[in-house]
Length: 323
Ligand SMILES: CC(C)(COP(=O)(O)OP(=O)(O)OC[C@H]1O[C@@H](n2cnc3c(N)ncnc32)[C@H](O)[C@@H]1OP(=O)(O)O)[C@@H](O)C(=O)NCCC(=O)NCCS
Image 1 (cartoon, helix red, strand yellow):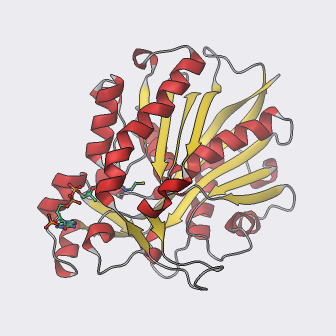
Image 2 (cartoon, helix red, strand yellow; image 1 turned 120 degrees about the vertical axis):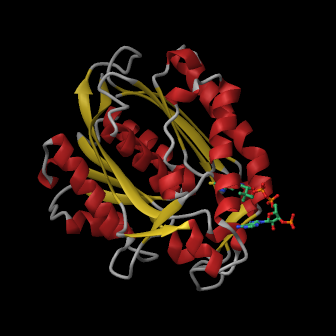
């Protein structure tokens, strides 16, 4: 029996910080509206020389450093992203090359904001199936490149960044008291895909397109989807909200985070919040928040950590990890 244990974590952010006030010059909005409706105060925006691959590489290197490993120790990379450097090849192989890896394999995974939760679940299965021993699971995004900067209902919400973890195979079955990935639950519902999508693509418009969202509709479904998969994970692991040490939700909107925690009965002081600093960084949001929580000294070895995300598709999912 094999299980997957988190060995290291790291993150990377673009140099440029964009505060809410800057949007007042671009669209009809105010800092006050953005803070009140979303909790976002600032986000990082990639410059021309910063890409999903370069941010992903930087986060991966930081995760390897924290694990005391080098790229040569890694045999697999999954990159969760919806903003790849190119339509193909996968940006994961570019990161593989940037890291100087000559072996192993790498691929991208696309589940929009749920990408990292999907990727961790997939990575865990590769490890438990004996297909990989040490892998990088990365979430990296440059959503600023697909935003309509004239649309106030979306452009204020998103930011760029990357986060990565090193997962390693360890002998022993996944169990609640052991370090490692314990349980996960994934869902999608393609009938809702018009609520949050990009209006372009290689096979339809031959363009990249821009992000479009029915914000109120997404909001309406968010808390129900989040609590659905979390309750499933609680059932699978045989725990309740009281057992978890840290809740690391997708960082899209402070009101969604607070409402989900409240509905689940998760105490406020256990909730990791970084949406004020990063905005919604899609697949990068959960690993970025994890990285910040570790840096802040919140999440420590042995803590029971609940990850959750939801996004375009709709896709949604949750993962329980003993850190
Ligand atoms: C987008 C969101 C913040 C909007 O908040 P809301 O309270 O639902 O606001 P509404 O959409 O009802 O809009 C209220 C008003 O604010 C306006 N508005 C929208 N964006 C604005 C902005 N940036 N600045 C000022 N006013 C804005 C709307 O046009 C609307 O005006 P109207 O009443 O004259 O039509 C909210 O719906 C949300 O967070 N949805 C989920 C989005 C999300 O998390 N997406 C990612 C999931 S991965």
